[in-house]
Length: 163
Ligand SMILES: [Cu+2]
Image (cartoon, rainbow, N blue to C red; front, top):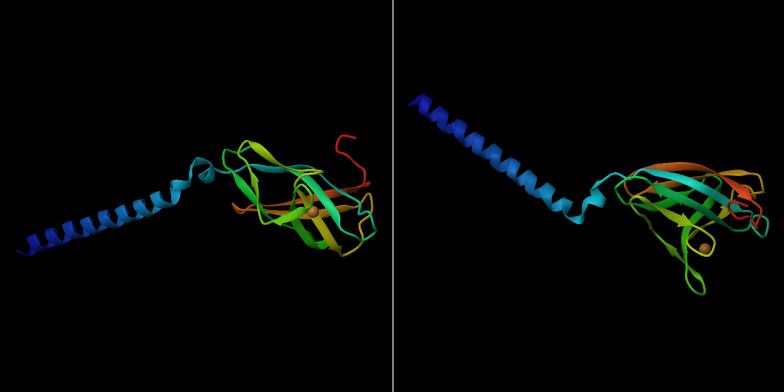
């Protein structure tokens, strides 16, 4: 009698464990619905970064760089900050002006390019007016949690990469 009761209790406990495991699987499955590239890791690196010296000393400057992604997962640049400047924002150029954006897509096996006439950073409120030859730190934060610190050279206003 008592051993039969115990077996019944064990079966009951086993069934409860299976049900709990099933619940967990369903919950995970629900989160995964947005696709392979969202689950896979991004492999990010920053190249070709530069800041043209502000046209007026101490004024706002643009910032340009390329975020390479050698991974199978997409990511998003969600924040840029700098110990050298209180204001760093991400901008997209439109036909006649520009607008601030809160995130920029970094495609899998691709690159996010910030370049003249396109998407760029706007940097201002400097701790010290930047001059050609300075190196300024930019800290790039990505949606999947990575932060990359880049030392960015200040170049003459008319500088073009590769020139
Ligand atoms: Cu701008």
